[in-house]
Structure formats: structure tokens, C-alpha cells
Length: 542
Ligand code: HAS
Image (cartoon, rainbow, N blue to C red; front, side, top):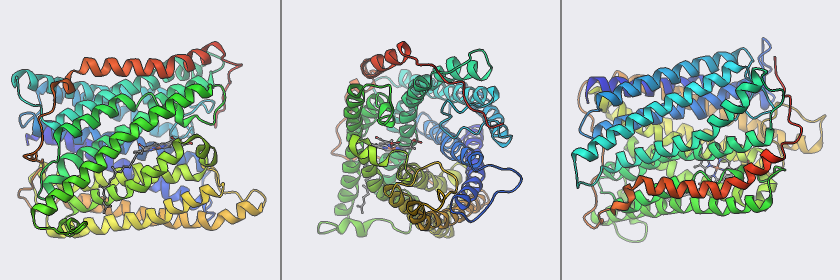
């Protein structure tokens, strides 16, 4: 790797882990408060910590890690180094995002942005917080544009060749991200900033939530797709096999591009002001977006099984024995995949209207996203870190690191078993999400929830140990002996067909996506604009 690319990638990855550490501290404290084990000193609020935890973990850790990872793979697959313009845009993006994150974090610490990670109106933050979010979004666009320019340049200079799949996937991920963030940009620029500055007196709460979820659902696929990139492109190489099908993987990504966005209303199934017809349409589209994940599961099983058979595995599950269980590059992401099976099933439950009525706004939902993003995605990102750092810095991934990485993964799994397991169960018993410690004046139902909340705190404490182990491992990786670590990029299996050219007709896909968005959102948004209600003046915490 070119030193300048290493610097750009490392800057992103290290900042991501810094955010993970701070977010982990907030998570530990907030878990102990909710479980009734701790009272916060110095006027620090539970919701303040909850906001810091959500923003640092779900938004900052993920976005920085993803952009760093994508830059590394784009450099690796598109000619060995990034174009100078891509690098410059990458640094510009990094600067804007980092300025935004620092301002937002200070606002949260000052209790001027205790609005949780979804920053829903009518909770109101200071204008600087919303301006900081804008900087983060615009910064991420710069990196996206850098990746697009690099990809286009490669295509022009390699006419007739199939584009490297990693970079194709990076383009889809960033394209989806940019189209999705338009919703939240409109919300922040036209609703939240003028309202927090006092230029408008009230805010149309339902419209702001709808614009948020237009962005909020594809946000979860922005987290997922880079994990899928590892599962599709990296893992086959790590196990010593080959990618099962290039065309299937690309098709799955195109489907994510099309169906990730027009589904936000499934987060608002229980909200008034949106007709059930449009909710129904978006639930159908939600079930469409499940399909590429099922295709991914199929493709992964096919990869594992065909590799297993090629090295002599027998019987239905003999391939399992042929997997490299002691290799952390495989073990951590594989555990992520395994957990994604119940995690995805939970998502399908959430998306089903009647069952959503049971689980909405309960701890079940918190349990769901701790399995999806905080386990499947996070473990995959950890798994990537073990080879990405040494391969970018010219160091060795030693056998000791494999062991430490496996211990870290197991710690994470045990912590999550307690925490997310308790969340799912107590959610079904009705315990609400986003509530500080209370026994509702010793109401029998709330008393029944308490042991689960204690289990959540125990799980959270184990997970915090997992964060610390990961940070220690990161430091060890940075100081590993000099040497070589492979950037594992899979080859295609001989049986795989060439992907059709239509997959790269971006105009076609963006056009189809625009139509889907217009179908799914025109009427609900028009309704909310025409019937704005009285609006809310908002609530502040300071
Ligand atoms: Fe979700 C709420 C529906 C996936 C994250 N979700 C959330 C929230 C977050 C989140 C953060 O419909 C909370 C937002 C908030 O703060 O309010 N979710 C879904 C559906 C899916 C789904 C249908 N969610 C995710 C992913 C996330 C994520 C991925 C993060 C990364 N979710 C919902 C709904 C709500 C919701 C409602 C709102 C709830 C409410 O009421 O508020 C689907 O995409 C899931 C499809 C997944 C699968 C699994 C495929 C399995 C694979 C693994 C194969 C394994 C192998 C290993 C090969 C169908 C690919 C096998 C080895 C062996 C040895 C067996």
C-alpha cells in the first residue's frame, strides 16, 4: 500500500475505535443505571449517556470504519493506490466529519443535545448540534464522491473488463448512502436548524420523523453492506476457497440499492398521521429487502459447502469441519453470520404489522439492533481489523493475535447473549426501551422486569470488557513485528458466470429507485405537509 493511502485508512479506523471506546464507557454506565446498580454523579443524565452511546457507537464507529475499509479495498482493487483526487476528497471528508463529531460530542457533554441517536423532534438540541450533523453528512459525501471518481477512472482506462467486485460494492454502498442522507439533510436543513435557531416557532413532528426514517432504514444497510462485502469477497479467500458467484453478489447489492430506501415507514407502523395503505406498501417493500439477505445466506452456504467438498468433506454438514476455526479472520465474521440468522428473524417479526404492535418501543427492538449492528456487523468489522491493520502497515498477524482475537470474539458473544437475550425476553414482557431506572412505584410488572435489567447490566459489563480487549488487540496489531499480512481478496469460482453489463448502468438503477421512492413516499409526505397539525414548540434539556 502507498503510505498516503495507509495514512488515510488508518486515520479513519483509529478514530472509529476511539469512538467505540468512549461509546463503550457510556454504554457501561447507562446499563448499570438502568439496572439500578449505579446513580450518576455530577448531574450527568441517563439520557445524556444514552445519546452519547448511540451516536458514538451506531453513527461514528460505523461510519468511520466503513469509509476507511472501503478506501482500503478501492485502493487494493483499482490499481494498487487511490487517485490523488480521491485521496484529497477523502481527507476533506475526514476533516469535515471530525469537526462535526467533535462539535456534536461537546454539545452532548454540555447536555445541549440530549436527543438520543435518532434526534427526533420534538426533543430539541442546540443549533450547533444540528450543524455538526450536517458537517458529518457532507464529509461522508466527499469520501463517496472520491470513490465514484476512482471507479469511473478505472472503468474508462480498462474498457471491456469486469470491474472488481469489491469496488462495485463500495460504489453501491456509497450511492445508497448519498441518496438516503438526502432525507435527513432536508429534515435538518429545512426543519431542525431553523426551528432550533428560533426562526420557526414550531416543527411538524410527523414530517420530521418520516424524513428521518427515509434515511434511518437505509442507514442500517449502510452498516450491513460492508459486512456483506467481507462475507462475499474476503471470507472465501480466508477459508481457502473461491467466491461462489460474482453475478449473484452484485445482484444482491443492486437489490439493496433499490429496496433499502422506500421502506422507512416500517419504523412508524404504530404512528398516527400516516395512512395504513402506505404503511402496507412499505411493509411489502420491506419483505423485498429481505430477499437479498436470503440470497446472501444461500451464497455463503454454497461457498462453505463447495469448498468443504473440494477438500474431501462428506455428508450434509461435513464442510463445517473443514472451516478454519482457529483463524480469527474467519472466526469473528462467521460468528457475526451465525448471529445474523436470529437477528434477521427478529427483523422479520418487527416488520410484520401485528407483531410490531407487540414489540414496538419495547426493549425487544433494542435487543434486535444489538444483534444486528452490534454483533453481526461489529464482529465482522473486528474480524476485518485483525488483517487490515497489519496488511496496511506492513506487519505480521501472529498466531498469538489469532488467539487473542478469538478470546475477544467469545467475550463479545457471551456479553451479548446475556444483554440481547435479556432485552428480547423482557421486551416481550412489555418493558419499554429508552427508559431510565424505575420500578413504576413498584408495579408488579415492572418488578418482574428487574432481574432481566440486571442481566442486561451484567451482559453490558462483559461487553465493556470486550471493548477493552479489542482496544488492547488494536494496540498490539499496531505494534506487531514487521512483516507481511495478506489483504485477502477472493478469486471467482470457475463455474461463475460473468455479470451482465446492465448491473453497471447506474442511471437505470437510480431511475428505478427514484420511481420506487416516489411511489412509496409522495402521498404520505404530501398528506403530512397538507395536514401539519399544530406543530410542536419542542422540549429542551438545558
Ligand atoms: Fe432492523 C428496527 C426490520 C435488519 C438495525 N433495526 C431496527 C433498529 C435498528 C435496526 C438500529 O420492520 C432500531 C431503530 C430505532 O432506533 O428505532 N431489520 C428489519 C428487517 C431486517 C432488519 C426486516 N436491522 C437490520 C439490520 C440492522 C438493523 C441488518 C443493522 C445492521 N428493524 C426492522 C423493523 C424495525 C427495526 C421493522 C422497527 C421496529 C420498531 O417497531 O421500532 C432484515 O434486513 C433482516 C434480514 C436478514 C435475514 C438473515 C439472513 C442471514 C444471513 C446469515 C447466514 C449465515 C451463515 C452462517 C451462512 C433474513 C445472511 C451459517 C452457519 C451455520 C453453522 C448455520
